[in-house]
Length: 131
Image: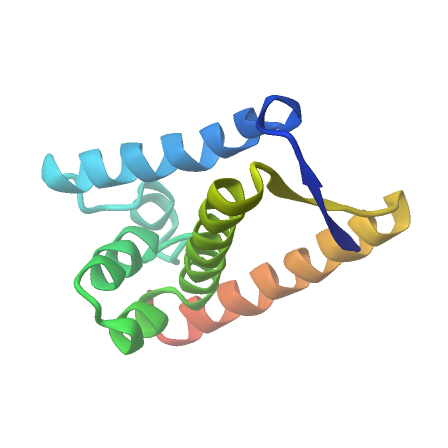
């Protein structure tokens, strides 16, 4: 895997929309008073992303350890997204290019398997601590 610098017009910026939409929906639901996970309400066990909204709110307040305890996987992904955003902004200003991760199909499959494994471990952590 390597980072390639591309012109902003060539970058797949639409890829950020699902994550931004999810974050906006979760924050909106939380502010509207919806604090229950439907999966947990129906099954009694936390879903793989339970605690994600709490983790985001802890991060926004600068409470890194509380965010990590609430939802380690989402916290790591949000911190990675923040690091990429800063890197992309600096690169865009100084070099007029955006860094885009490019990899072979095999490397993407390995990354997907790694993320799936981390998601399963994270879900086990959430279940073990009781949601």
